[in-house]
Image 1 (cartoon, helix red, strand yellow):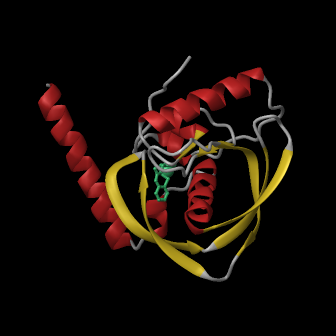
Image 2 (image 1 turned 135 degrees about the vertical axis):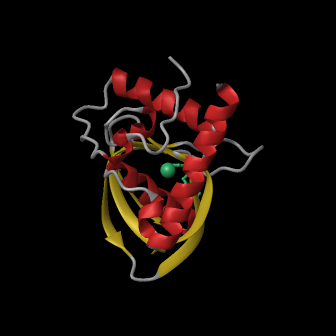
Length: 174
Ligand code: GNR
Ligand code: NI
């Protein structure tokens, strides 16, 4: 299969709630492989299945730096069981909202239960960028985008810039 196309706003699929995976079978593993390839090619540090048009509760993440050994994390049916009161702000971007970035405040650490690539139950305590990335991706599974965490003013500005970008692209193609 391989690399897939990444959906961008205003694709209505990005606002849908994804369904739990019933069994981590060969088809799901194949999808996870494709998602990882798509994420590396983008490049991005995380990707939710809905971003490649599949409404299943699957996330891939890899925070390793360029030139380092790859360290993929496969997360199926994540459940965040704890979020710290302490918040942290990161400049976030999203492959589904190209070229737009904004500071987003989220709980600085969280605990998440999930199934791994082999369908095994796992639990991790995340902090720093990993905690932010997991929360960003779990939001995708619930139809939520990082711009939903911004003020209306900042959100509208990003939506306006994105519409302008799309117009420019259309102008060059036609
Ligand atoms: O590549 C990505 N970088 C990023 C930076 C800060 C916080 C979250 C992210 S996730 C993003 C890829 C993406 O859109 N995942 O859904
Ligand atoms: Ni995203």
